[in-house]
Length: 137
Picture 1 (cartoon, rainbow, N blue to C red):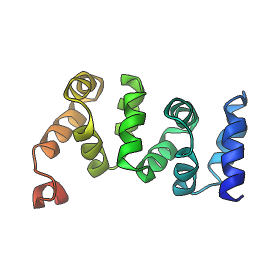
Picture 2: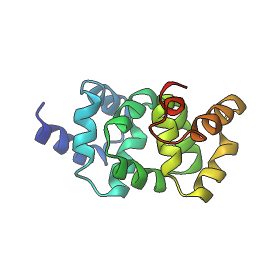
Picture 3: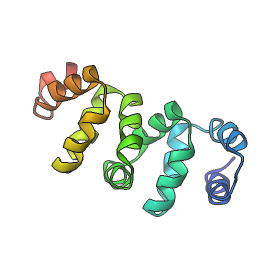
Picture 4: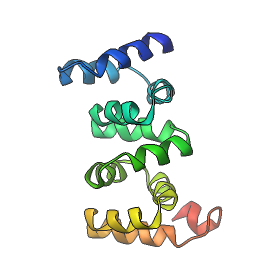
C-alpha cells in the first residue's frame, strides 16, 4: 500500500466501526509510514486515529512523529491516554515528551503513572538535554 493509499485508508477508518479490521490493516504498515500519513491530518483527527491503534504499535508510531506533532497530540490526549502512551514508549522518548509538556500537564500526568515509572521519569528529566546522564540513564 502506498502512502496515498494508507492516507485514504486512514481517512475512511475514522468511520470504520470494526477495530479488528483496522488493527489488522494498520499493523501491516511500518510505524514510520503510519506517522507520515497521520501528519497530514488535523490534530483532532490524528489523535482519534492514533487512539485506535493498539498501544505498542501506537507508541512506535508516536516515536516517528515530529516533536511538534507529538506535543500537539499530547495536548489533545486525556491524562489516561497520555499515561498509557508513556508506558509504552522508550525511556528517552518518554522523558523528551514529558519535558515538552506544559508544567501543569506534566504535574497532572505523574499521578497516573506507576510509582517506578514516576521515579524513573523524574530522575531522567533532571538531566540536561544532551548530557551523558540524559543519554545513558
